[in-house]
Image (tube, rainbow, N blue to C red; front, side, top):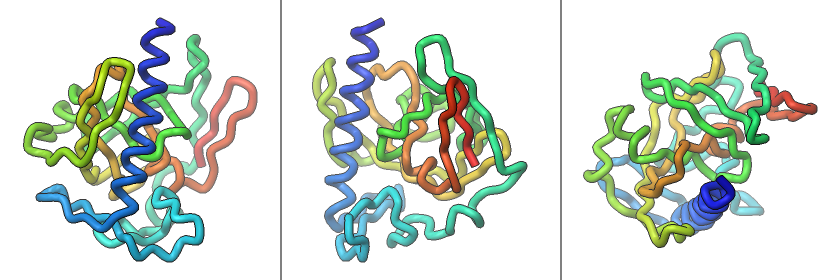
Length: 188
């Protein structure tokens, strides 16, 4: 179990660093419709929290959400928070990971959504405990957790045995708030 968690932490770190590097340069990537903007106006250059990017959704969080507006998630026995998310029409169990820059999908979950992973261009490598694995950027039409929906979500398919997909900052940063009190996480 500890080895798997260390591997997951390595994947999260590698995905975060790799995708930040990809986002910092201008690139146009195949049919995925993904583009990064090197001429960003952010003082800190944090592409995951930017409101506007060429090729990415520019809708503010309040306009991108729907439903009741609040979701409570209980802490699991392994100390993490998990959400059942509707990703492009498929139900996917995801670990909520505020340390991940983007939504990171396992190959299995990406294929369940209908993504042809092998047709996605490789946009970098993630160094994991199991070795280097390719990262493939993709734009998700919609990610919804119990009525809170965000459209146009940046993601990457990571060809590693992460065990679970990660609900990262490309979703979380577009919410009004993410709070943890005791064993309860609240998304608004």
